[in-house]
Length: 198
Image 1 (cartoon, rainbow, N blue to C red):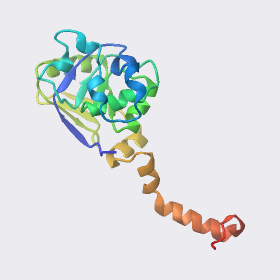
Image 2: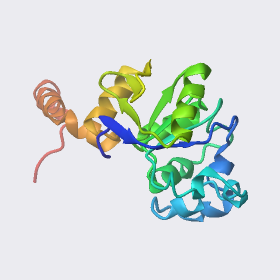
Image 3: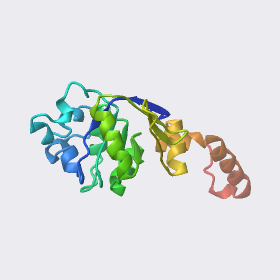
């Protein structure tokens, strides 16, 4: 998993409430277990609408998505997070998220930032103007070149994992020294449970 420290760039000004995971990636795309290639199917139905933000060249490749309340509701499909990553989105900013989507996003290295609606409204204005937005995970804030500054909260464990680029395997390997110490102690204290070496 890539480290998440700071993210700069333009943002997709979506702002739509109750975007469910079927809207992010439709069920017909769930036949694959590959995490790559799903970006082309992301927001497929929305992309049928003329003037949608996803096909606007001004926002192509933006690493930030600004959404409305209750983003990622609906099913628990992890493909939604995979699709966002495949289209280059590293951060989603919204007033609230579905818990399951937020968990899937975190496990795949996407930062979800919760901000109140007035902050979302201001960031939508900035994004619609094509101006960049800066997110600093260490400092836990979102800023713009117009002196906007919005602080956000994040679970300390999630922050640690994202800053270190630690997925579940990486997190386990990060504790390898402690695991070795524990196994050595067990081998001393309870040798009957340690398999004999041939």
